[in-house]
Image (cartoon, rainbow, N blue to C red; front, side, top):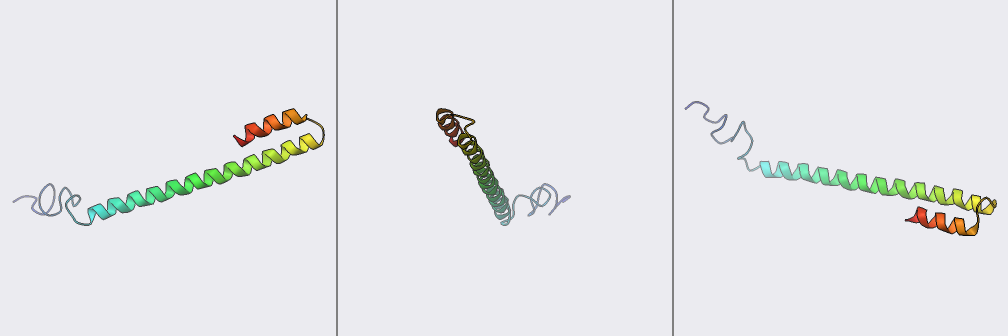
Length: 83
């Protein structure tokens, strides 16, 4: 009779976790939140990378226009930045 309804036996499972109908919904909600956070992090990183590469290409264009680098160097560096 000890621990009936609490602890390792009874309707609540182990300390109230485990055998309720709500438990799968809680786990699903946690996984959904984690998934949404991962998507936002990936999109943020992708946007940040494209911003940096566009700035680098603009700087490269200016070097080419000012005659600091040749056309061959410009095309080579531009292909490296775009990859």
